[in-house]
Length: 224
Image 1 (cartoon, rainbow, N blue to C red):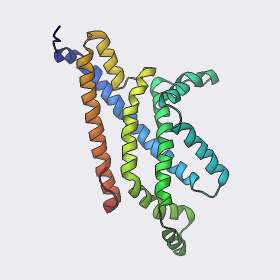
Image 2 (image 1 turned 30 degrees about the vertical axis):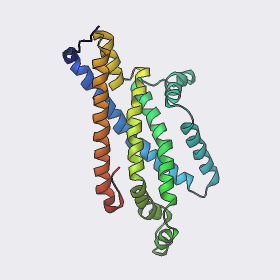
Image 3 (image 1 turned 135 degrees about the vertical axis):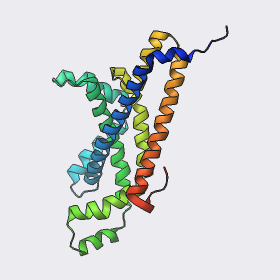
Image 4 (image 1 turned 90 degrees about the vertical axis):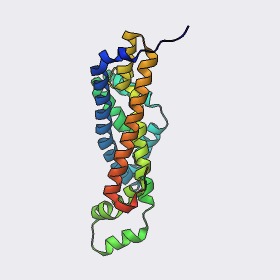
């Protein structure tokens, strides 16, 4: 039997799709800001001389990098209520994405920090800069410039991984697609459009972060 394509049936669900795309964008933006901030703190701890702190952060990184994101999400949404901590779908999705991105960005930023020549750190100390000033102006800036393309790729991966959050009814793009196909029974058209929207979001996000990196780090960043 020949299949009859009908994309016009999706028009009635435009508000649902728009809401799904908007939720995906907001989830990604919030988790990126908080996750990268967590990664900077984690990288500073991993490279510090305080061994217990470095070990704790190292254990966090290994735990997150060696367990599925879906399990992490379910643990936060379904597991924490057993301890009396109840989060809404959106809150649980953001927290899971921040924790996940924080672990991966910790390792990415740590690699950049460890690539900083010791001579630069010694030069900063010779100028009378304090430890936090050296980390902020001498170490962190150049380190972020070196690893920006890798960090950009990780953020895009986290954005695509947000589709898993539909499993806890967070109303992002995949949730919208599932909702629509369950009502119009046109799965090919629905998921074709969802695929196209994810592709557009990923390309746009990579382009925005690449331009942002070029502005922030001038010549130190190549295109992701």
